[in-house]
Length: 551
Picture 1 (cartoon, rainbow, N blue to C red):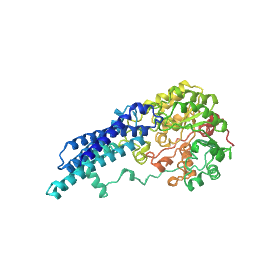
Picture 2: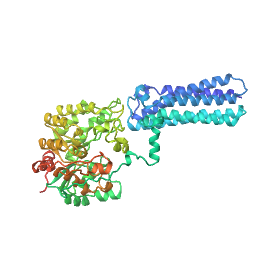
Picture 3: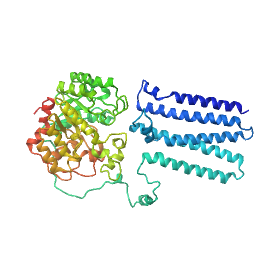
Picture 4: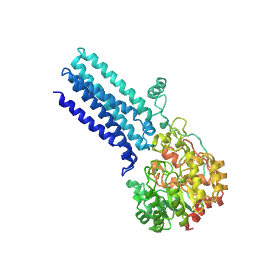
């Protein structure tokens, strides 16, 4: 009676094995799709099918040769063996193992890593269940003392599962966990007893009292070269605040003359131009944000970028930007390698911007803390714990030091292309290096958006830097995404910037810290001279973007 089931096991095992072998690297290389997670899924399926096929074939052959007696028990042991195989595969197919050993996929972006970890947990859970459940049935059929033996198997199985889960999923996803560090448990007790708090709950009420100069309206007209007005149309509140009519009222109240929008919804430049720049041409302008995806970018797509930029400029865009940080960090070519920022395939794009005489607002890299381990030594720990997707620490990302020289190569190879380093080029941790770039490359400029936290804690150095390079810095905020968050209205948002630039106030509250915990410190004003303020507020931007404010 067992010949047919054994035969079926061998047949299914053979099918699994052949299918797994058929899903070869050559097939992947010739696949019409090169998306990262699809490649990973095929590789994982291949290894599982091969392993399952071998187990089923061996089990079928062994069971067919056994005597009729106790064959049900043998089947159950076969299921246990299958569970062990699945568990082992779940153990070895960790993100690090995948990156090191699977030749078609030498990378894992954040979403791929998360999916693989989930897949690994499923494999471990399913494998452990296949081990424990048949053992309980075997005990019931063959052991007289059922309850003690069953309890022993269950306890052993749970402990084994938790240990495997800790050494794989938990250790990878939460490297700072204290599950196996018994000496750290006293901290948990202190937390439960209310004798300590989580760092993310730390929200001190400061007792410092200092005189503050309030700045309601900017001293001169202002052009904000870096605002986000389209991608946050999600709620009725957003639509109300960011509607052009309401926004103009807020702009007038604080002295903001022109906002340059760097957002385009669904690549639909026409719609956003109609909403803002064409309706109110003296108050709004729009850039074209050349897109670099977090996954694969084909050579064909790269070759299309110059023509795409030219079409956008003809439609009414005044520049390219915000050219997103995926370039150099996440965007990969067809081979799966990170696309370098100075890759020769991008030369026509950089050259086209120079030919059209339009600047590129380039967000390259990110804050230094985002490239460091997210642990107790990271000065932006709270921010990165709240927004883990902003961390670029790990083997799947190049270091900040690795990508920085590429920007210099672009500046050197394309001297006729104006490049504005978004967010002070993310060199706020080393303004001397930012100064070196400005001294070396006349086609390089900076915008100060999102950097109040970094600049305001070094006010003396920042003031000297802004005065020295007053002709090379433009005003920007990254505004739009934070309007209304935790009480940061449009007016309050901009007034914090005026306070930083126009006064020597101490202990200034700034939007990014108040809204998203960017930096656990306050900042200090740099009180720039009027002649410098004028250039940074609007004169430099007028020259770069060929626009004019109405006085």
